[in-house]
Image (cartoon, rainbow, N blue to C red):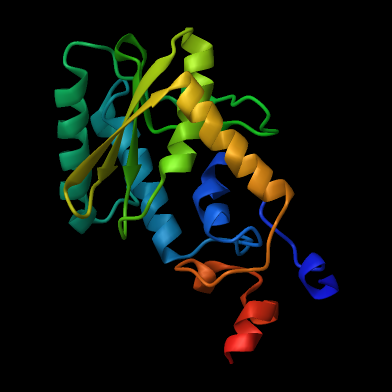
Length: 208
């Protein structure tokens, strides 16, 4: 048990929740990689389409082959929002979540429809806990007990809808907190290769 306790873990923050649900000892690797840089460029280009003078504000770092993916996400967002205002500025898209030390951030916010959208590149994965945390914070902000999330998987051109009640989102986050506060033995999962503890993980050593 001493060996496990010596491992560092990711902080309890929205973007880590789904990985921590697979293993309480997950730790993000420091720095970024090509996939991270690509995701950041896609995110910035997507946001720019809903800001003033989007043509001149689109980042030059967006690769030509990624422009169709961004265009698809913009089209879906406009279709879902209809006539409602779409907010993509980072200041207003920051979300304070109850009992989290740091705020999270959504990619697009449509407050008049009590919904937000998050753009995801790369492989499809589960983001339910991350989105439950964002929904909880936004329900607090806008005084509602119901919130809708649309995940836009731009590489697959697929969309996923998630709906949360305030109590339902709170239960998910409370359970995630309890599991984080009482971690079990590290477990093998799809995020192991991303984990900073991979080389020192006792579970991985047992498999070697």
